[in-house]
Image 1 (cartoon, chains in turn blue, red):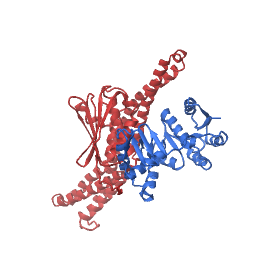
Image 2 (image 1 turned 90 degrees about the vertical axis):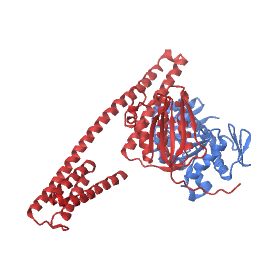
Image 3 (image 1 turned 135 degrees about the horizontal axis):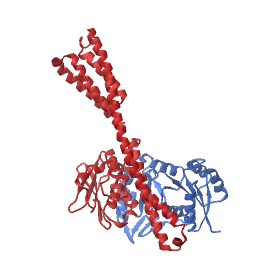
Image 4 (image 1 turned 120 degrees about the vertical axis):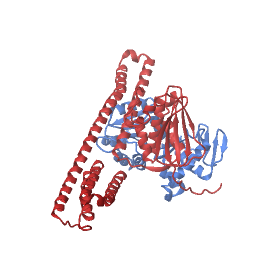
Length: 225
Length: 347
């Protein structure tokens, strides 16, 4: 009974098919729905651990399906969309999507998002210490190590880093970060983040112009890997 | 929106200048000849403005001429019957000539855009059919038993599919960008950004394309923030680097440097390719222009998109050839007053 079930809601056969083939190689059990209505029914009957939802469905807008799903379940939902503008992405996250992928996307990207979605949903135990390659962050002790050596971060730098680390792999929106760290009046002060992310990268990344840990999601936010 | 108000300003200035000129010429020519000068001004309005503006200009010229020049001066009354007829004729001629100039002008524009679309369709159909052929042939190949039995064949077909799809993706993105920029429906989403961040995102996006070139990045320690639409500037910079990858030999270096010069932040891309022929230096920024003899893979939109985006940000782009070889493209973006930061308490 250890199977992980994924539901794909997309009207395009070719997309469903290639997703199915690729996800099956990772031993996920897949079910599929061709429109929103069927998707909602299967979300109840199939008991998926994660849903991949296309925004452009023949019967309803995927956004409506997302909202409907969110009214009764917290399972991770990854949205597929052809719109690569920031407003759409932010709206999706606000509506409760865990993540999004813009077509055309790479299959490795999708598999990574699926892994993160499943992990963040309690498939892996939470710990106060996060490790990623040469980087180690202890949220309890408020200490950061690069290649075993402690790196001094300012209070705010650590605040920014820890909020990203807690959501490892997931995109955290700029507005959320600004609100949590500087308060509700600072939500439009995006330049605070630019400065602190820049400083953080200089301290924890090997090459700040080619970051491997703090990834920018243009116009949306940041993602810690 | 901004363009429109600039146009109105131009027409108002033109009428004012005409009036001023007429004021000085009237003693020499007499008030009747002044009408001809106003007609001339309306021709110019017809070249640039809409039919509505032409009508307004004709109306205002008529009123101005009447008020300031036709006796009795500084009234809208006209003394002689001759002048009344002339005045009426002026108004009719002004309307008709303004309208005609406008139409000739529009026809020319239509012809130009038709020529543009022809180039567009030719180049698109050619550039898109090549990768499409690869995709179709790959699909057929993967249905062949003999190919399926040979893993190295399958791998090479897979690589071909990826390359063809990437090429189509590039063309589609550029076409989308171009049509968005052209429609004027683009509203800039200006925010403060870190140029290091911009470079990181672009580099990450191009990691697949960059396997055959080495990208050296040089960013000084302290750089000012720039106020940009991140998405657009990302497309501009990605296009610039993609050009350097596509049009230079494999295993050569590409340098991406940033610097401040005066009130501008400069982002430059230097390559070790053949450089840009002097005769083409100005043409390469035109839509659909490709330097004769360049390898397939583009439709000549990249540089015009970059220029468009950079100019939307009140910046400019330059190109020069390097010694002994290579080209250097530089994007200059204005550095605005830096935003203030919250005070952080010492640790």
